[in-house]
Amino acid sequence: MSFNAWPWFQIIASGFSLGSFYALVALGFSLIFGITRAFNLAHGEMIVLGGYLAFVLWKFYQVPFFLTLPPCLLAMAGLSLPLYLLLRRLKEPYALNTLVVTFGLALLLQNLMLVLFSADYRLLDSGLTSFTIPRIGITFSWNQGVLLLLSLLATAGVHLVLHHTFLGKALRATIQDWEAAQMAGINVKLMSFIAFGMGGMLIGLAGPLYGQNMYLYPTAGTEATLIAIIITIFAGVGRIRTLLLGGWLLGLMESAAIFTVGSKWRELVSAAVLVTLLYFRPEGISFRKPG
Image (cartoon, rainbow, N blue to C red; front, side):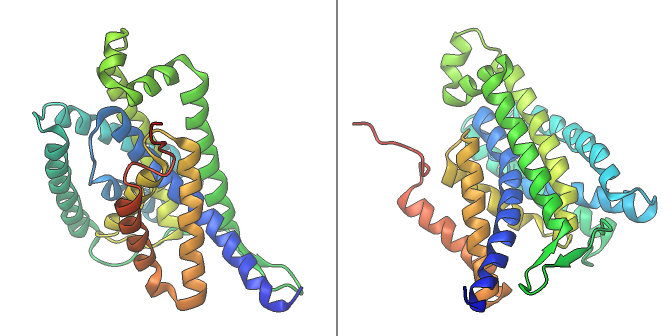
């Protein structure tokens, strides 16, 4: 094997860890949208807010990185529930109204974070280091390993809940057909409440991981929201395994772009993927046309 092949192993390692995190970012968004039809444009800002909370605990109270995860999970779940109460009061057209309200909330959170934390870039330090395999030159970061492990565990946990519990069956029924689920006796309002709670916990997990692997700044949430939308469109609503596949593909494409043409092209790759999906497969890659 030629030496020139080794950088591609670096791309694959980085792509899978980054892609698994992207799937985690999209998971809460997809779950909430699938059950409530609420299009949350403040999703990324909530992730960044969770990252800032972890940063405050780590920086000013010397809480170890991994111990910041439980408070962030609880705090962001608690923040998501008032958002649910706000959105459930909206009238038709519901989807359009949720876009307007959550866009306003995103701007509010951006300015709030700007006031509280300034525009400086922040980064959480988990204390983990990197290591290089001798003679090969491939560098692995323990941060990437933690990112991959926690993202996969969270995704697997949601998959198990949705496919192997009675609650999961009720949630999936609500995702597939809200009215039919209600006629079958499922409390769809309770399912919506639970979806926001679960989505908030996933946001609370993604926030510290975002702050550990990417820079925190007040407008960083826009990119996270874009990633969530791209992967949700790719996967189709409620499809966890396809969501993970979409995260991996996007992560690999971005990693390849960074290694070949530079990091400044990463956002362009995401935008190009979004436009392509909207044009060719707006119903999702796993959608099958009748007949």
